[in-house]
Image (cartoon, rainbow, N blue to C red; front, side, top):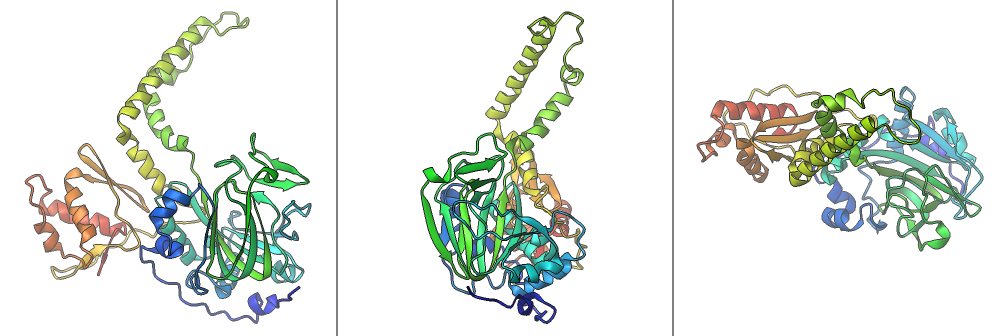
Length: 436
């Protein structure tokens, strides 16, 4: 078994300097998946089947390193949010499960636990690494994912790792340093399971009512990840992993947001506008002797009929879901992340050039005479007549001046110049435009 001096990597005498994080380019997802395209990832792999992408050794060097880990652990000492935490395990990546449970660890114990052979998991490490948090948020925006995105970090000594289990979210591993051997099912035991599950003594241990297919009935694959390699597993895919030499890896997780969370605002708005819904079932003094009282049954039938009518209206006009869906892309991006504050307006001249911010894709949906656009601070609304200007902005890669934008409109229905300037100011203050 290979011995590693973890004090030299993470202890007081370890180097403190880390390379400056790379600025966001708007192509973080593309760079992460290369040579696979984001389109192929979204349509063929994400949440559907496992994906292993081999990359050059330095592919993830700008994302994370041992020095960045040491800095994050130092910042983590002052974090009070329990969503940032450390867990440890002395399991060895057993394919048939392990009786060695994970246990809570503290940051001062990290080097001793690693030296003793334990795997360390730093949950939500992005909370202690602002650059990593912004990078993860960029992935979320570029994948147009309405759920939660975050980053965990795993350090495993030689021969250590987590035993067979599956997660209720998509797990994407980036091998940063060392190697790790993974054994995983090529498909999910159950798509988007309700809870995590472990496998011990031929039995599935899970809080889910239906934990899905056991490992014995599934097809498995084994790969050994080296620095620069990526492994993405759908939610519910069985897997175990073991370090080959010391392993440092990031796990980018994509946790789903239930569709009902997006439907609920529409239903609540409908119910709040209807006195019958606000009042609830009628009071009755009749005996309850095996059947629902007729008055209550009639009330339930009428309300369900109204609900059916409302659902049909949404089906016939799916654009009614645009607002809740766009809101889901912005609300609660992921644990511990907070958007940048609203920017002050610059002292711009007629010669200054602007462009769509590289790190903030410009996306909008038209509903009637309103245009809705998501940003980190929530949803922005504009008149639908601004849409042609927004579309042209996305094509002007070299940038544009304010006089250029004012001269673009060719329709009599376009916003007047003073309104265009106000709309551009709103876009700039919310980080969607930047000066070239």
